Amino acid sequence: MKFAKIPSATITRLSMYSRTLERSLAQNEKIISSERLAKLCEVNPAQIRKDLAYFGEFGVRGVGYHVPELLFEIKRILGLNRTWDIGIVGVGNLGLALIANENFLKQGYIFRAAFDNNPQKIDRKLPNGLVIHHINELRSHCKEAGVEIGIIATPGIWAQEIANRFIKADVHAILNFAPVPIHVPPDAPPGFWVENVDFTVRLDKLAYHLTSS
Amino acid sequence: MKFAKIPSATITRLSMYSRTLERSLAQNEKIISSERLAKLCEVNPAQIRKDLAYFGEFGVRGVGYHVPELLFEIKRILGLNRTWDIGIVGVGNLGLALIANENFLKQGYIFRAAFDNNPQKIDRKLPNGLVIHHINELRSHCKEAGVEIGIIATPGIWAQEIANRFIKADVHAILNFAPVPIHVPPDAPPGFWVENVDFTVRLDKLAYHLTSS
DNA sequence: TGGTGTGAACAACTTCACAGCG
DNA sequence: CGCTGTGAAGTTGTTCACACCA
Image (cartoon, rainbow over all chains, first blue to last red; front, side, top):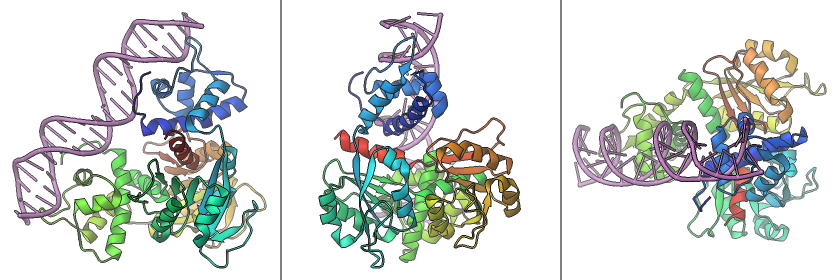
């Protein structure tokens, strides 16, 4: 396929395909059709073929897709054929849960630095061996640890300030769990990216559907 | 405005507007224009006006929107002018973090029941006073506590089974944090709704953008 | 034969531009 | 006058339908 702008939703789906293919692989499925994968992911089969077509031709006509090969290609497309170094700010309940989340590690996301502003927590050692540092030392420790993706798990008030500090520390991507959207400052480097994860939005959607049906 | 199908994205944004308006209110802003609210939420002003137009006319031409009034209306639309009773399965790191999350409580989401399958955890009391029950007792305790929304914070393997049990317990909405999408079974009641929250997808998006830029 | 790859039709959502009104 | 409310235009994303090929 020719060059085209890739829909953001396509990337989201590729990530889902990858997770689903890992399960298929674990069950020793060798070949999968777009129809079967579509059913597992609850999307339209044509959608899957189109999503993949943005990046190449990975299937065999009349047969389907070779599972290990397709998984490999999708992970390569997403940049998951390597590990990623993560730094996190806010070692409260949520922060601890994220650090302990083994799915992240399985996908190659490795926590390399943790920060908080609570003096009681500074210098404490986490189960994974990481030592909590004060946010004032974010820049130096992030640079030293080669942090590439920053996670914000602080109260909303701090989120933007932490984001600015991550930017100064050469961190080019942020996953924000605070319930306040991060604004990308004008001086952010090109290619800087933020994903805002707001649980409350999802609960609100459920409340809406329960209310209006 | 006439009857029209309301985009799912509109509901997502209404939830964001609500959060933003709460902050404006806390800062004693009385009036807000679609332009200003748009800037705070990083959306197009016309988008805001259109989103609101699905539900009525809440502004004053030449002036803007009265903040407390608009907030009230949006919360009413979303069904947040009341409290919602929540049940959660999986009291691990993530589950505990969700239960302790004060944003939920602030929005009117109240945890009424907690379940796990780890015998060590059964009958233990949580900081908020809730006692952890075995998932075999999900149905009776959910009914007794009037649980309306179920949260799944278990490993992926259990997610679908738990969802099925929630359905049997008359729970009509599920927020699923397991990295496996919940399939809505054919025998689910009409109006049943699922939201799948998958952190890994969001990290994968960041990895993709860092890789291809 | 059967499932992929893809142009074309379709559907959904967003933005524009301006009428309408306080 | 200024900002909302909204039809129309524009843009983006999804699904169809079938050519193509192992």
